[in-house]
Image 1 (cartoon, rainbow, N blue to C red):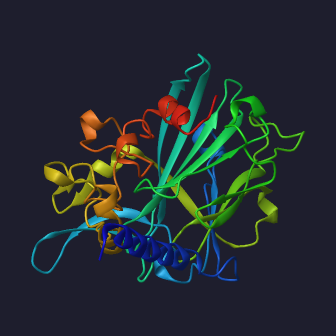
Image 2 (tube, rainbow, N blue to C red):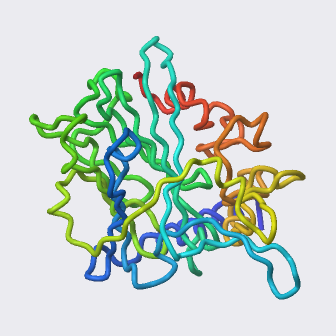
Image 3 (spheres, rainbow, N blue to C red):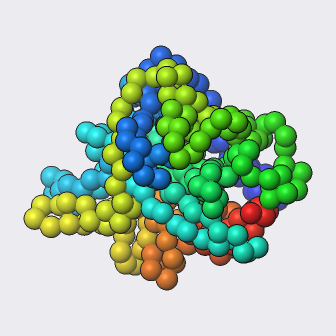
Length: 325
């Protein structure tokens, strides 16, 4: 088989995987809304409401990172569904034009993505980044899976059009097969420091946990069973209780340093690693300075764009993707 035919074959397989990733049911009667009940501070007030599709299935439920010993006495990292946690961090940054912004970062995880989906594997999750301006108004919503894939941006009506990428659509946008709004419109009477009835809502597709809709809704208009979410600092992922001590959610050394333990993705390794030049493609990872984490949280599959598309350095990341905040 020639190289060009090999590329065509691999692209066909990848397309099948992407289609499988979208061919799962939409909103239904078994959906569950994950909600932070308090609203005392910025992280609580702006926390997304996550509506997970078909939540009767365990792999669609949000849990918390946990560790245990298996029958052989080996460490095992898994997602415990006893209670749901959003792991959080705040990140102030200065955009390249000198304006100051503040990121509210939320991370949450699911037990697994089932086969035969392209992203099948355990311990995957999702990042939601809410970017606030100096008036503490949300101007941009960024979502991406914790492996760096399926990146999506949804600006809000608080962001001027001049700050958006050129040719940004007016109504809807297509993101790897999902249709998302091109802008999130806040009502004229919305007061970000007082009105806690309006929440940003993410609807997730069953099985793949893809973001399939982002809306602003009043809490009493969200029709799904409710589950309360606890907020914990992101650094708690590095101190999971295990026996009489602690362990990390991430590998701390070696060629897997900075990657989530037990997050191997066989289909992505088989279909994508050889042309993306990354044997760890699809593995979920830590978000942080590569000098400390050992890995780059890149969001572009172009090997030469890994540093520029690293979401940790948010100002450079936005510039790479065409945003002019």
